[in-house]
Image (cartoon, one colour):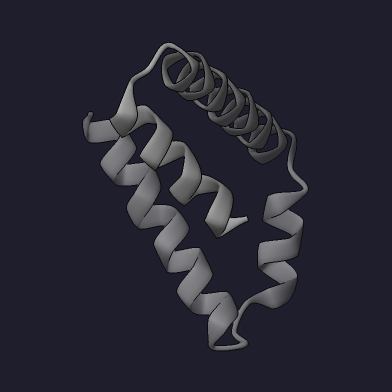
Length: 76
């Protein structure tokens, strides 16, 4: 859990730096690093797994899963 917090803080700092137009080149380089590509792939897989689970639960009649799935689809 502590590592998640560190990753969130780290990514938040990067996003703020890019948002302020500081460090755009550094951010690009970082995001193309093998480690970040690996993390992005893991995040995408996790997101897909969660969505599949929500779809399965919603099809089984879980109203909360259906609502959450609808919310996620609205964000796309």
